[in-house]
Length: 340
Image 1 (cartoon, rainbow, N blue to C red):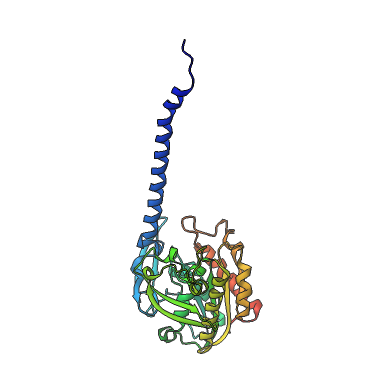
Image 2 (tube, rainbow, N blue to C red; image 1 turned 135 degrees about the vertical axis):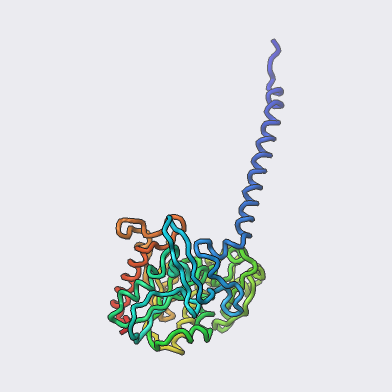
């Protein structure tokens, strides 16, 4: 019998290895194409968790915002959900009737908007009901996809002040780490819908926040000059120390703008997502005269025996919104800044 020297076996296995390599390469390319397709889909900028009939993507100052006086109906777990905007393009707050002496503004993003809950189940509406005796009017200025850049644009818009009658009150700002990306106009986030208008701000050489125009998401590109790295994004991602400072300064500047028009009793930032470096931003916000509270324990716990977050999208449930409203009232009271 002829001895097998192994050469024939090697020749037989070589085509199999080549086929495996080619198959692996094809799978990797398909996955890459899938990721690119997902990132380029316009629907991913305005999450499908909020009905697109609400959105105006072409406001020259605010970027994307809500249309006024719109009512949409949607189904969530077979339950009919009503979402309404008022004449000032805010999410409608169900407010008890009465005369009000002060305000509570809730902003800026979908975590306070009230995803998949009715108008009377948002944090603002729960807050309004629970503080009826204090005569506080609650305003829901939360818009899906907003961050510090949109909120700063909002409070420098005369339309904002036309919609608030009271002259004193507090602001409750919901924070998650995506706000750093939004403040920095991070391309990987914003280019998913290249046609959406965005307000852009930078921190100039004198450490002053300055409006740098309104541009489309498709205009934002990574640039490798040091000035851009300090003012916007970095090659390693948006979560740099400079972008945390930019985020805190934008929120602080929004507070200063509000103080020009109101007797601002307090400005509170509540942390709502898992952030291992929340304490870094807390220190920066403290320098801006802003209080911070960590609600992450609440968000990832049980609300009346059920998960506090919706499993499909990690936004608060109606019961979680009630728990947040109760927590906000408690924290504002402990700080001594609950409006009266």
